[in-house]
Length: 254
Ligand code: NDP
Ligand code: 8X3
Image (cartoon, rainbow, N blue to C red; front, side):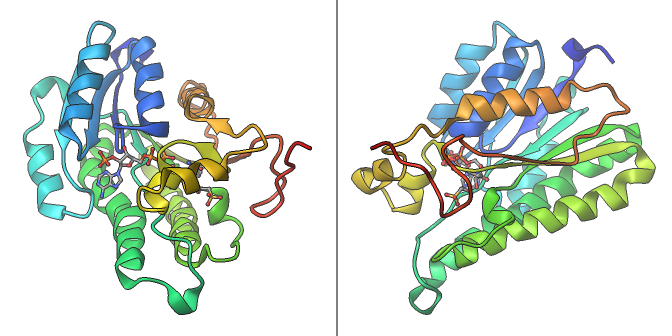
């Protein structure tokens, strides 16, 4: 299929990696269904991209099964056939030792990063199975490969994404659907602001003294993954800033 005719469904498109991916996809003529909870950000993105591609926005919380179903039912005809799903919506909430972790933070991470990803996939899969084609990119993390101190439940949620990515690939193989994960290390987005509940100073410090990845670096990789020939499936990809060697070893300047 010509890349120009494809439609991508991106969750978490209102900021960071999802937004950069939407922008790059649109500039390559890929039509978009953009999802998030902040309607003003979805509207701004739609206005800025609609000269390059067809864009439809859906406002739902990935934790809300019914809202996802309603949103899918509301899709205009031009957007019902989804070729690419980028399961990107997610976040960390808190950075506390397990013994003092906040239950609401745990619920949020498991409900958004794990159950939300499953609910959205469940809603998209029937179409891909009917088409006997499709490409799912699950955004995992280095946190899904290696647990770091105080990362406990966030790391668990991303280890679950790693397992779901493998499980999806096994189960969807017979339908010709490609499944792969992109697992970034430190990327400067709104991620740490959300983790530290709006404490911008604390968030900024995470990315000081070295060059972190940019959301655009990850978008570039996601676009590379989805533009490989059909017989090539990038199953699992880990990418870190050059300064980062592991979740706990980051070479700072000076
Ligand atoms: P951002 O905080 O910038 O973006 C997160 C996106 O997810 C936003 O668009 C937000 O939209 C959406 N989102 C969050 N919660 C929900 C929800 N309940 N329902 C619907 N949408 C939601 O962070 P990143 O771009 O960095 O994060 C994107 C993905 O990348 C996440 O899965 C994250 O875990 C992963 N990741 C990030 C890394 C980093 O260092 N930044 C490294 C490795 C992985 P809205 O608020 O409008 O709903
Ligand atoms: C985000 C990367 O190291 O902040 O998944 O957990 S990290």
